[in-house]
Image (spheres, rainbow, N blue to C red):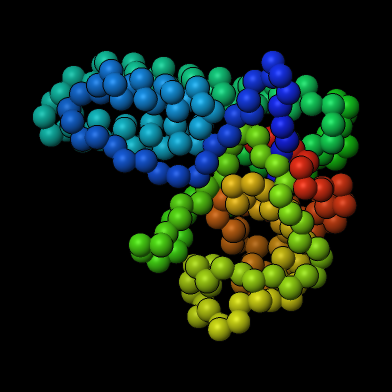
Length: 244
């Protein structure tokens, strides 16, 4: 489930959230330089990365407390401030979606709700399954996939029943040996919309590795075939998708 666009003069740049990890220092204190760097990332709109930094930093901090009894009050306060900044970014994305009068999708990632909207009106509301975060690929060629946050744009549309080459890692995740030719007719069933950054909005197909109600493509948004059939004709490259 997915989509996004551009900004004019005087308009804040859209907030985006790449799916990526980040190295974390193991020094016993959260230095001002590191806090400044994280703040710059947040202000730049990289909300997903900030979430990862917060989570990893929290784990590292707890390990220091357990090992050395380090007082974590200052670190905890810094983390709380970063979480507040992250929430502010997501609130801004929500506000941008509400102000957009053009045709767009709004996706509430945590609740799994997708709405097709235009001119302040909700044209369709859909339930969605959000793919879990996953590290895919084979080292050293790996990629961490997670549901994005921020503003995205539809980059390309895969038509219903079209032949599509599924990635080799998807077969491995499913415990299936990848065939020499991974191009599968109807692999994405009713079709799909790919967003910038790699996220995909799709529906469960009738056959192939994705034909499993319990499995969702990591970091993807899956809606019902009926909902996808209804919204896909409205999605063109350049259409905005707001994820928060």
